[in-house]
Amino acid sequence: MINSCDIPRWRIGEAAKRSGIAAANIRYYEKELLLSPGVREDNQYRLYTDGDVHRLRFIRLCRAMDMSLGEVRTLLALDGARKDDCVAARETLNTHLSHVRERLAELQALERELERLRGQCDGSDSYCHIIVALHAQADEPLPTGLQGGSGVKRHV
Image (cartoon, rainbow, N blue to C red; front, side, top):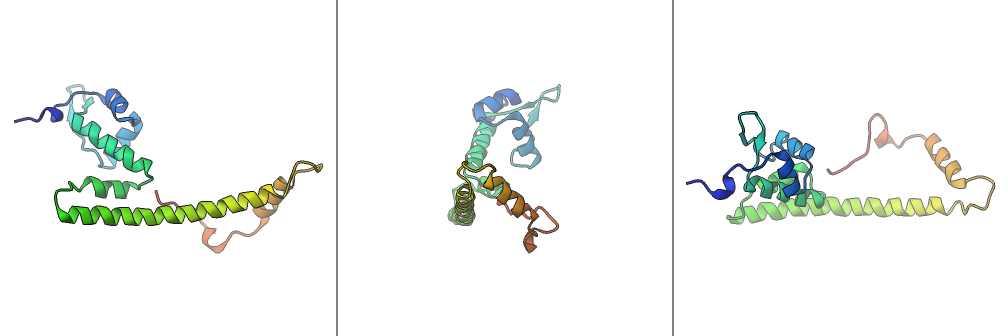
C-alpha cells in the first residue's frame, strides 16, 4: 500500500516554495545525496513528495543552525526510534555546539579588533587613520598558518 505522502506531486519550483529552499539548493542537496533522486516524469522532470518537502525543511532548519552538510547527513540518517539514535544525535549536537562556541570566540575577537580599528579615527583629521591602519596591516607578513592557502578555517 502506498502512503499518500509518498505520491510524487510537485516539480522543483513548487517544492522550493513549499520547503523554503531555492531550486538550485535542492539540486545541490540531491547531488550531495541528502535527498534521493526520486521519481521522474517522462520528460525527466523530478517530482517531489510530501516526504521530500519535509526532508528539505529538516535540512533548511539544520542549515539555519549553521550545521555542516556532514552533520545534517548524520541527523537525517537517524530515525529517533532507537536509544543509539539519541546518543548519535547528542554527539552530533555536542560537536556542533563546540564549533559554535569556537566561532563565537572568533567573532568576539573580531569585534574587539574592529572596535580598536574604529577608535583610530574620528573623522576630524585631514586623512583617515582607519585606511592607513588597514594598509599597514596588509603590508605585514602573513601569520604562518595563513601562508600558501586560504587559511580561513570555517566549520561549514
